[in-house]
Length: 538
Image (cartoon, one colour):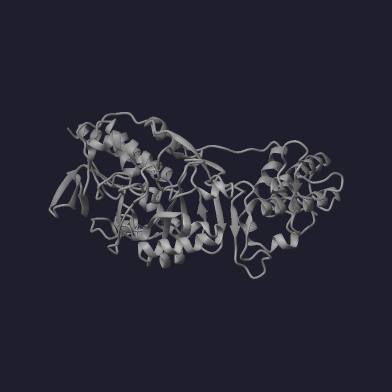
């Protein structure tokens, strides 16, 4: 009898990989796939190649975020007039960096002025760039924005949990200890199952032998017992040194204890598609990307212009805006509109959209999320704990993220929390000073004694309280993706939408950029088709 392996009789490769992934994570699966000569790849990496001129056509772009500036930059090459109406006094949208003098006023009226030292900064918007976000990297290269490595994972960082059944509840432990032990024990169990032919499946003897070799290497198991006895990767009680000092290896925890710690549920042998161990960030702050765009599109941007109405007719669009400095209103007319305003904000703006389009705009929710930047007078995480980048994890208040710049400097600025959902709402209800107090109290669980003593300055953001954003990013349910998302990907009359909300990479700069690429291609085709039709009629 043969089936997909779910009833325990025979098992094909697909079913076996499913089992391997459930127990050993993605690295185990990828290792097996490599052994079986299986592979995968690829993504979008450049704007569309568009031909034909549109001289004299005017496209009004709403929002000088990355999507809006991408659209203006690419369309201007084709002869379009591309005025950008931006409500803020700076470009970049949510691509922001807090540095000395940066001012943020939330919807509650609370205003913060960043007081970090001049060489310190905090990316309270986008935080990192994966290697496969080629659209973002396309423009960092085109605009000469230098990049540096961002350390996104560091097993030497701490984990702190409060759990009733956890033997280490209320204690901090190194992440590397748990990662090594759960990986080693998992490899041991799988290796023994393969060695004893316990997996009665459609694997050849050669497949089994290759897989066994991989598991022994992956879990650093003992031969021939196939037992996990610990590894140098989990750390030493005393590190090896010079002379006659071989070091004292640390001993693995018992498997049953490791399984009681929920940290293991967060481990991915190969991290999620957007969360690789090493990533990129611009030198000097994420807003360097926005500034790169601004250098080539700044002449198009009209700052302090808040959109009040979006109107359209058969042959064009009319945008009503208010000057945020004077309160005066005026109308801006054009042939088309590319609107990059977040849907959480757009849903509140009167517009001549069709009923289906208006309903689709209201379909997604927006993430409630907040971040806290804390400047310290001493880089105690490096000097005392030997943590260089990455994150310390908790199940109490979120993570602490360490900077990937200024190594071994005198001072440093880390992320004191990154919270979501109900926790973000609760914390955001506090004043900026109270948020700092909260971050210091929570951070002291991970870094006792030094956290409050070394603190110098803080800056926080609650994105759901930020004007012109009203949320961190769009969150689409499966039903909304099916019923409403396709509607917004097509124009409504002469209005095209773009932004991270029109991507499957919501919350990422590449989502905003690539959505603009798609929409400018559609708009250009529409404009050329109309022009040809006009010539024919003549």
